[in-house]
Length: 99
Image 1: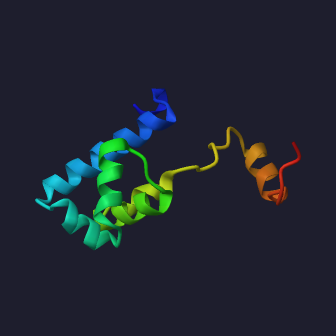
Image 2: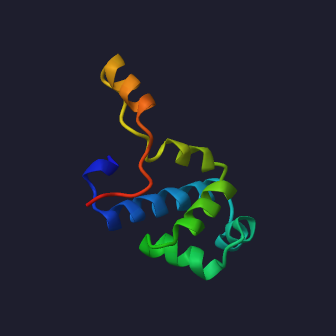
């Protein structure tokens, strides 16, 4: 579902999901903000606009017990062959881009 959305829309979807989880727990914004260690105004901004720092989103996810889901993000694509696996293992990851 998120693959068809733009950056701002993804933020809104994540904010809606976080709000639904918060309400499902019966928590107020102040409760979640306190548990996450963020300000209530920052949480409100996230829930209403979908805009927040990555740090805030991670803190909210942790407070909601969903931080482990972020471990799946930005994984390299699966190898298509044994040769590709061997090539990846033999080639060090560059420290800088060239372009």
